[in-house]
Length: 510
Image (tube, rainbow, N blue to C red; front, top):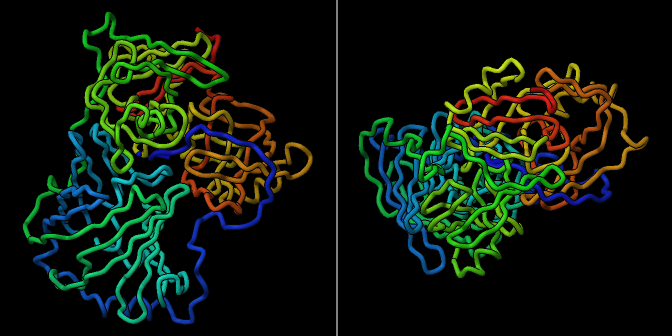
């Protein structure tokens, strides 16, 4: 959101009432269950059993069937960690879990955690329930007849999104799994259970996200026990990043850029055709508009294409993996920022890509503030505060204009907001904010101050995400807030994704 993909800059304003679905999405088919949580989990464990010790480490061979395509998938499992690898054309994609962190890597080898990812990825549809999960993270959410009589248990692993398990009342197995990515609901239906590993596991499942073009039928073709090392389930370390064909003098490349109402557009050559892309720190991937892709007669597979060559100014990259969504514009996200330092000078409308050596002075200058930032979810997350209400997961988003606090922050600081944040317009109108991934409902409030780094902004208007959103595409954002270009545009920025840091300087200071 995209480590995550996050907020794409498509904003629509309208008045909406703060009623409807709760801030954390839940399947709409739930009703209270008379059974106890302990009894439901006991029934599940009794029905499925446990994986035999010799299968605790194993290799599996799967086949993805998507329309007429058959895609081999290599899976390795080592205890609670796992990794799945597949190829689409010349691009290799992977996804898995390391420690307790779910992650995915695109065809450029750029990896991010998926906790804050709201866009999602049709290549990565790995069900939680076929891999080891902790029943201690599970809560009985209710029961449902949506797919037949079932208890519904939600797995809220600490650094993952909620997964909803439908435990069939007759068999005790997980017959369906549901999760939410942005506006999309991912439904996985399991069948062909057997006990090849010692536990009852499905050998086939069907995955749907509402778009028939992304439907997957998955078959487990082979399961082989094997002693594996950490390297066999490790996050890929090979990355392919944009570089200059000829090293630039001084280690800095100035990009052809246009600034328009805070948004930054960069000229990009896509395999011989020129277009403007949005430079967006709030997006995890290089993204192409679906209509533009189809006009080129490229056929996306599971929402991805491989672009033969991309040039951004003097920078270039061959065989570029790109996410394809209906958005109306291309986006340069996390994949573009990785591998160098990106300098955005809002005051002078300049964008530069710099080597770490060329950018070194920006991080040692006394005129600049250097901030630690967390980039592992695909966007820069930093510390910010509204008086005593503070958080470490505010997203710096060059693709969004305004300042918001999200529901997790609003819940933690509910008493402070109620007592000291006045309604910005004298009442409580809620604004429905529409992103490419989905929507939020926010109430404009006025806070006494907003502090970013060593700078304070007094009497500031901030949108507060409401706990209830009536729209079917309601978003659950896992970070604290969004800092958009209303504030970002007041500074000079140096983004060092690899170094985990940002340098910033107030405009007019040299």
